[in-house]
Length: 157
Image (cartoon, rainbow, N blue to C red; front, side):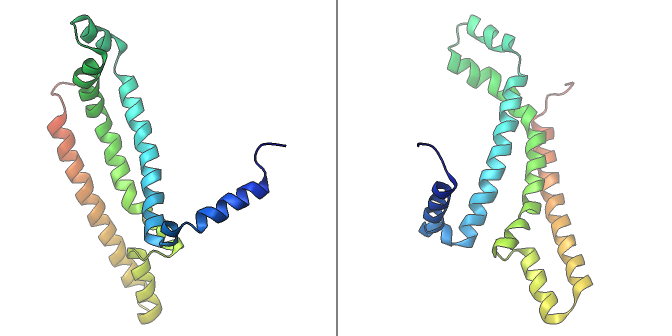
């Protein structure tokens, strides 16, 4: 019989695990975070493009623009302005997601904090400092993206 079975999944998983690039924890972490973020960003962009009315595309084509030119010059600029707030949310989530790669062995801020706690037994101070570092990082990212949002927004809309 054709199709997938549990045994087939195990064989494929075994081949993936033995793939040399995936033996590096940092690459696996980057790949995981990149694919996760890319999936969300693709949905943000799709939603922003769908939010631009079809009348905009038809109006551009009625002026003699090709379909590709009307998408490039009419639809995409409007969609990109609408997607910036969603991108800023994703950009603030990404540093928080790096904590997840700690569980596959990649040493990030949380990994360093765990090491300091096990060596020096300074639990509260260490985790407060890590929280402040995350807060500063996310605040900087958020302020930078707010600046971009204000620069690209259309007054009155």
